[in-house]
Amino acid sequence: MKHILILLFLFSTNSFSGEIDGKGIECWPKGVDKKIKEGSMHWFNNNRVIWVHTLGKARIPPSEVLSSHRKDVWSSKTYTTNANHVMWTSHVYFSNYLDRKTLVLEIRNVHNDDIVIQTCRVFTGFEEVIKKQDKYLKADEERERIREEKERKAREGNKI
Image 1 (cartoon, rainbow, N blue to C red):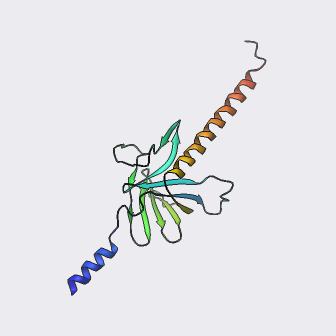
Image 2: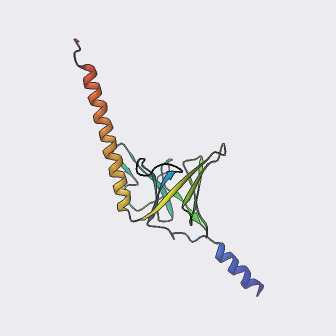
Image 3: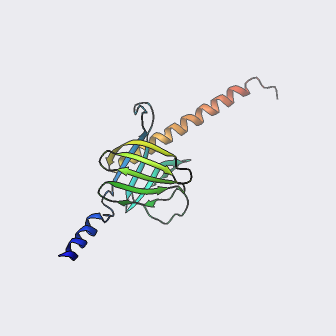
């Protein structure tokens, strides 16, 4: 009986890898109006998590399948779960703790103990990631257009 109880306890506290695969979260710093400010987004798949963003015209992640082949700071990281939290590291300085019931994300800087609190929403399906990346790319194009326009105006009237 004692052995059965120990096994039940170990099984109940063990992480169930992959249980949130195919889902993502979009988060905002606490107190920020979600209608005004874009949130940050994380995608979970293949027992991994990655911060959704664009780099130039490149989409990161480029597809819903995440792998560990890339070893740079933007590569996906493994995540772990328990009954109450999803945990992962991002970059080299941050530990992330998502409360599964309240969807509050704590991002802790491991070097100076700073904590950023964010509130999140859950989404299912990679289509949301593509929409977010499209927004980022359009915003980048608009910033570039404005920069070029300012440069053109600044050069008007140059004699040489």
